[in-house]
Image 1: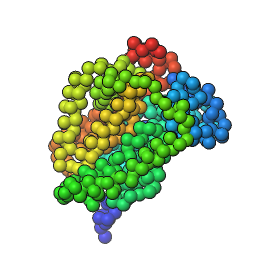
Image 2: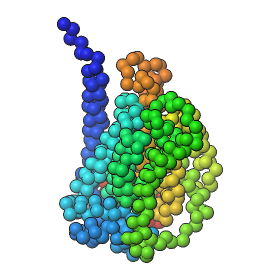
Image 3: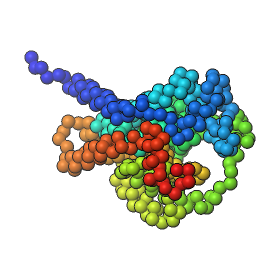
Length: 434
């Protein structure tokens, strides 16, 4: 009798191996961040958490819905951020951990690891090949640009909102073409966790428009569908999810005092000119994350050179996405998010550029890069790879090794305020606060 297992068991064995590889990526990510349990409170942590009495009692769970995050600070209460879910998590964490900074850092790390797993599940929901899905997962786990969101306690809303928003996208894709109300609830929670999560609500509609809800969302060769029909289906499939943003805006208008909703005067013309520079600086950090910091020298107001660089990179990404709807969706989604977070950074009265702005967009960029390898029909096959795919995968693995090598030095700056401000002075010497 032959000892060869039946063909039906081979995919199961391959899937099991991939789950072990996923566990290895999660373990490697946890090991790289292992020292965060010895880190302290830095930057806004002392003001926002340690000295914020509203978080130090269970009453904070109710206050979270009727006050902004900075309402306790008279200098920052105007235009304050309405993030009740974040405030509720912070209140619960304070009642559990108190001022133990190590426990807070471990909570942020656990959220980041959960986003790593969420990235893999999203990649598989989009029918990317298992190796490609693991590549995207490794990028999200190991990329140094994710350090600020995963390590800075005050940035806890970034991984939390990303988990909720991308989890909603997983549910929405698996419910295709029906509207999933659990996905709507997750998006609403994400919108009430961080304002930048509002930018992810249109993604189900974008996939419906460019791929078509009548086909699997990763179908490499979707039959041509008339554009009027696509617009109609995209509105039906993705439109209801935009209600999550409307719900967040409505709750903010009804529950937040008018004094905390006001926004001070801004020089919109001057700040808008900096948007291309902010986007270009974030994109550069995404490709080669060296000497990351909590603050950077403000981009030059001259937008021409950054626009040229962004146009070249964008054109290359669109060209690589040709004839592949899933790649085009991820490409468009990434650039839309990059433009939006750059605009938000440019109009931020504080730092124009922060690594955390691109925390959520990095997931889409990682998925797009993975889609270059994983949308072919033989993506999961055991057939020998072509020379072109071998070269591509070699370059991808080399880039991952570079990210891993750069990670420890960029992580250590968040150990204490001395390390953080030393790096800030080097990267932004003109900023008075540093």
